[in-house]
Each structure stands twice: as C-alpha cells, then as structure tokens.
Length: 404
Image 1 (cartoon, rainbow, N blue to C red):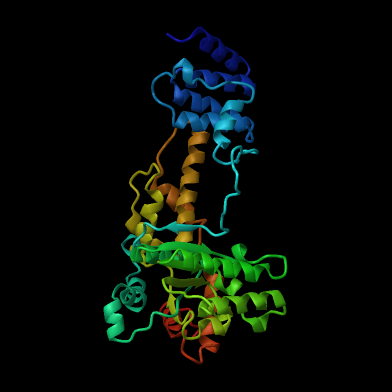
Image 2 (spheres, rainbow, N blue to C red; image 1 turned 120 degrees about the vertical axis):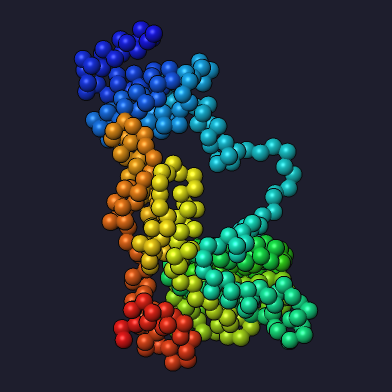
C-alpha cells in the first residue's frame, strides 16, 4: 500500500504540474521508497521545465543507479539544506589540511612525478608495424646487452615519435616503459617553461636529475616542438637558452645518463630544432599514424567497456571510422553515450547505448586530423630533400593526400 504522504504529493502535483519543488519532493520520496523509475520520470519532467535545475539532475543520477529495494532510514539523503558532513568527506582527499602539527622538518619534494607503468605493447591494439619498429630499433638492444656489445650497437640517443595528434604516442611511450620494467617520467611544455629568467633552464636540469635518480627510467618529452622549438624561429632568448640546456642534458655533460631512456613526441617534427635530432640525441624517428582497423576496434571496445551497451557492432564501426584518431574514437563513444543519457532523461526510461546512438554520433563527429594532414602534405612534397619523411609521403600517397 502506498505511503499516504506519497499519495497526497501525487495529488498535489497533479493539481499543479508546473510546481517544480513540489514535484522534486515527490521524486525524492519515491526514490527513498525504492521506486526509481517513477522518480526518474518526475525528475525528468522537472528538468524539462527548469533545464538548469541541479537537484533534478542529481535525483536522476541517483535514481539510475538506485537499488530496487527501499532505502533504509540510515541512508536517506537530506531533502534540503547543505550537507556539510558529506562535502567535508568529498573534499578530504582533495584539499590538504591548513595546519599540520608535529612536523619538525619540511618535506622534500620534486616538481616531477615518477610513476610505474603497467602497460605492455600487447595492450596496444593493432599498430603491428609500429610495434615491430619499436622492438627492432629500440627495445631489442636494450633487452639484450650481450648482443648489443657483440654487434657494437650503441645505446646512446633517443626515439622521437611523430604523427597527427590523438593517435597514441603517449600510450606507446608508457608501453615502452612497461616493456623495459622501467619507471616513467612524463613532462610537457607547461611543466618546464617559467616566466622568470633562468627558471626554465633550472627546471630542465632538475628534470634530468630526477630521471637520473630514478634510473632505469623512460623520460618522455611531450610536445617537443614547443619545448625544443627551432632556435632560428624564435627571438626569445629564454626559449633559446631552454633549448641549449636541453641539448646539454641530453649529451650528459657533467652527468651520467646511464639508464635514462629518452622518448619524445611531437605533431610537427619539422619545427623541432635540428640539433635535438643529431646522433646521440633524438636520432631515431618513428611515425605513429591514425589507428588501423584492428586498432580502432580495440579502442572502441576499450572506451565502451564500462558503459551500458547493447548489440554494438564494433567491427562495423571500425570499418566506418577510417582516418579517425584514437581521440576521435573516444569522443565518438562519449557522444553516443550522451545521446542515450539525454534520451533517458527526456523519456524518463533508462535505456542502453545502441547502434542508433552511434549512427547519430557519426553524423556529428568527424576526423580531426585534416589540418595536420595538409601541413604534412606540404612538408612531404616540398621539404623532404633528405628523405626523412619518405614514410610519411608513402602514407599520404596511399590515402590520396599527396596532391600528385
């Protein structure tokens, strides 16, 4: 038998359908009574009348994940006012305490975080050619020091990953660290550059000192074209000095870089200072292209693994997403999920993510690497005198983007 209060609230809402607070109060009562479907319907109606109502959104989110049995009195959520205890609990791991007692010495910390990577190359879907090149040109000599000495293979130098944005260069670098059983230290432009003169060079030195102290380690320099931009293209002395410091650290002048394996990534290798790519520095390059069909299917499955999906044909989707980057595929899954969510809010009935959502999302999410391909085309046609971009030119010809 219905709770008399719920019956009264239903009657009151029926008499005044535009009263949003009253309807949300009814939704709260229904949710506490274990009637999540009916609670969603009332909260969705309230959201239709007031699209920015945060309480209606919160009720829908709770109702979608609510248990099918009535919630006990100890787990009831306040219907009004601000729950300071809950807020304190939520922020406890985010906001550090204002005062600390009993510390005699300040904690010594570094600006750069060294982590452990659990990824392996087997976790990278598809991309067989890229993985084979990594194995032969970089990983095999590191794993076999006896053969390296026998053939006189130098372990100096690093590897530069280049290609369009969002295609998994950082993911590959983490997988390399996992293959080597090494620590992983990743930095980008924002981690190094500083507005005060001399601080950027100091940051670069501290970065390499941290890496040397954590060896064996994969030091990953992201956005290398920003950190190590051609000195001929900048009139900023601070940037020139930062590049000079980076060159010094890569050469290991005054320090030993043993066990520090340097990987870097860039979308625009043609903007990287040539001195950074000389022998003994980042002297090997690897082109990382948009994922192939097998890799696209693996990426789609990865981004759908924790979502409520129904009869999704990832094989068909992988065939229809030629030229999509990994980031584009992640955005496609996010867009399909958003369409299903909004439809559930609108109808008041929660449902799974289906192929119809992906059909709609494909009409909106297009490949994002077009501008990069245009720039790459110009480089492959007019700035490839040394042949260093022959692999890129071959890809562009194969996909009809060479202009020839």
